[in-house]
Length: 274
Ligand code: DGL
Figure 1 (cartoon, rainbow, N blue to C red):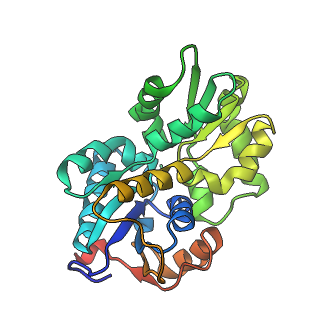
Figure 2: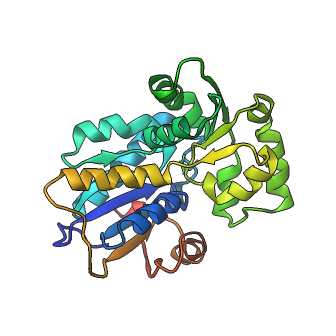
């Protein structure tokens, strides 16, 4: 990735690894002509079990890299980072910064039939209280909320395993609290989890609506573009850049599987040489 401001306004999207590609997919589908830069911090994943201060520092570092590359909007496509750093990033940067927690909660509030909402996420996300606060602000009176952390899910996804017996066994164990709480709607409060949707749906049963923040986040980005100085682009083949701090070959292979053909060359990023 080159440094310095690009002539081509673009949206920067980041996650600890591949999970944010679920948000990028929705963005590309909604805004197919918008140039994007995706940064997957695969070399330092997972964020979920790390101390919040460390994740906060990572989020600021990546935001600075993306801003220096010329992005005009930032999407924190990582619940763990958004839960601990979104407000700071919004205060510090002079470009719009969009998170994934509020959009996911909006989608859940629209989807729930009986107000029985569940949220699953990383240890960091659940411990931060971000979903508890966002649901309290948006949910109808009388709702119930059950939150549970799912340590281990992200590692399976980053290894390309989304439906093995092992991940199924783990899902049976980790999802027991939300299943026992008889939630009717389950927020996938980690951007990696939509990639496990089939396994999670098998365990939760067909009556439970699984909600991801991806589409709502993309709508928020479009609304911000509409409200800003320019309208979303409607033609042209946009530049799409992929950057990883991990192994670019693995990222390219799994990225193509999880996102699609849009993943071309993946640019390596080495934090130690900066
Ligand atoms: N995909 C991320 C999230 O939404 C990060 C997961 C991790 O690195 O632990 O929380």
